[in-house]
Every structure is written in C-alpha cells, then in structure tokens.
Length: 116
Image 1 (cartoon, rainbow, N blue to C red):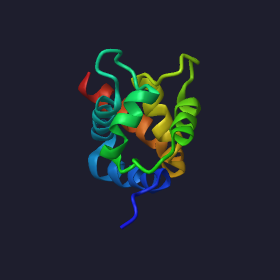
Image 2 (tube, one colour; image 1 turned 90 degrees about the horizontal axis):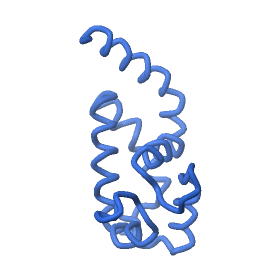
Image 3 (tube, rainbow, N blue to C red; image 1 turned 90 degrees about the vertical axis):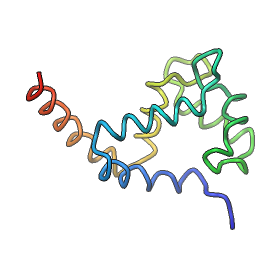
C-alpha cells in the first residue's frame, strides 16, 4: 500500500472539521503541531519534520518537498513553522476549509458571545 501524499490530508480537514467542530479541529491541529515540532525549539524545523514525517505517512517525501512545505507556511521567514503558521498552512492546503472558514469564524464568535 502506498504511503499517503500531502494532498490526501487536504481532504481530511473538512471531514475533521465537520465531526469535531471548530474548537475540536483547532485542538487536533495543535496536537499535530506538537507531534511535528522540535521539542527544544518549540517550532517545526526541517529536521523535526523529517524525523516525524512517518507519523503522518509522509516518510516518502524528499527533503526538497519537505523544505518546500516549510517555505510555503513560513510567514515570518525564520525557516521554521510556529503553531500559528502551521495552522494557517493546514487551512491553506484545504480549499474546502478556506471556503468554510467564514462559517467557523462566525460559529466561534457566536459561541464566545453566548458563553462570555
């Protein structure tokens, strides 16, 4: 059986969002970030991504493909992904979620107003 490619995960985010709701999805993204990050630096580096890629079935990706993923998500240009950059990248990789992001934002705001 072939290992999943990054595109395979794009399709999972909308399913996760539907099942978990907005808060649950964010919690799962945070868990994914912690799995991939360098424990000492607190960010995802190329080395930590290479070391932990198998956890996501990405072990077949070449170094240049992993580096490209990092560059795509690296908004501040420091060569690594912090938690916010990782979450933004995951949403950007999922076109369906980008379309639904307004819905999730409105839902989160309504919950915050209701609970607050």
